[in-house]
Structures are given as structure tokens and as C-alpha cells.
Image (tube, rainbow, N blue to C red):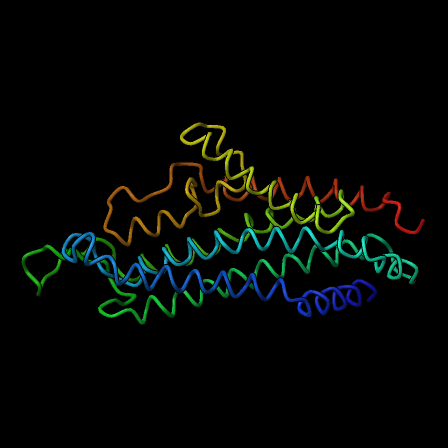
Length: 287
């Protein structure tokens, strides 16, 4: 019951702040803008007959850019979860109550996980709505626009197969986003100053993105949890969805990448959570 009380208090505090709403709004706005602008630009830049025009493609592009933006705000929000209260002294007021530090920490973890899930769902739903509303596109089969016989079109992928790609692309973002949130939370435990903590969390996440660029096409890339988040360089399943929506026959994941997409983010989050909990338990807060 005490954990539930802590969780309710943390969630209330989170959604009363402006930053989570700003991050959510910008992530959704970027997703909507990316999907809509791509729908408008594709016929001019690449030719309407060259690339299949369908809602799955616009959704994948909106999801890619929306999650890329939302990931930074997720880390920023997580970076303030402990540091902001430590700096203001409000965490001391919480811990003098009959609650355990472990319960407070778990409540913060579940709260930031909830924010990650809300981000993912909001970006996904907004991208899907805009992609479906784009003129001349729908969530149907991906067909070859250059095939001569319009009555018997050449189908790259049917609707059921594409919906499977879409659902997998969204589901496989849950653990990498959770790992990103834990990175921010770990920094928040280590650094007491809120401004320094938020800045350090974002720089750490940006640093991991830069590392991905240097490790492109190298085996070591698969050991980074953010390799499975959409960005300039990544192996997220969103790439498979976009490739399939464009009729690419080689749009598939290498063998074993499913395993890495699950266990690398899970292992990263687990290791950092254990370390952060131990640090939080020993942190001098009441002195």
C-alpha cells in the first residue's frame, strides 16, 4: 500500500510539471509534421510512380522522428526525478514519513516508465491518424505503382503482413525507451543539482547516439540499447516497417536481432537500476 501511495504521489507530481507536457507535445508535433510533410514531398522529389504511396510508410517516418525527439525529453524528465527533489529539499520531507527508500525509488522508476509508455502511445496514435488521413494513402496492401495491370496489381506485402510489421515496430520500442529512462534516472541519483543532472543526462544520451555513428556496421553496435531506437544510425524494427512499406524485398532483420532487441535494453536497464537503487539507499539525504 505504501508503494501505491508513493506511486500516486510521483505521478501527480510528474503531470503537474510543464516539462513532461512540453516534451509530449513536441514529440507528437514532430511525428505529425514528419508524416504529413513526407506525404506532400514524396510525389515531387521521388516520383509518385517510383515509391508505393501508403499510410504505413508515412506512419513509419512519423514514428521515427517522433520517438527520436521524445527520447531526449524522456531522458531529460528522468534526469530530474531525484535531483530536482534533492536540490529543493522535498525528498527529505518524503523520507521522514514511514516509507522505505526502496519504495520511493521504485515509485519513481514506475512513473518514468509510465511517461515513456505515454510518449510511445501518443506518438504512435498521432502518426497513425495523420498517415491514414494523407490524401491517396491507406493502411492496405503495398502494391507496385509501376505495374501495368491496375486490375491485377503486383502486391509486395498484404495488409495483414504490414500490420504485423507495424505492431512489432511499436512493441519493440518499449524496452529501449525504458532503458533510456533508466539512464536519465541513474544520472539523477548521482547528481544533486537539477540543472547539472538534466544537462548531464541529455549529454550522456547524446554521447551514446554519437557512439552509434562511429560504430556503424560494426558488431559492437548491437550491444548498445539505443541501437534499437530510431535515429540516424540504428537497427530498430521501424526500419523494417519503412522498408516493407516501400516495397523493398530485403526489408528484414538479420538473424538473432530479435534477441538483441530484447535482452540488450533489458540487461542495460536492469544493471543500471540495481546500481542506482544501491546508490539511492546510501545517498546522504536526511543530513
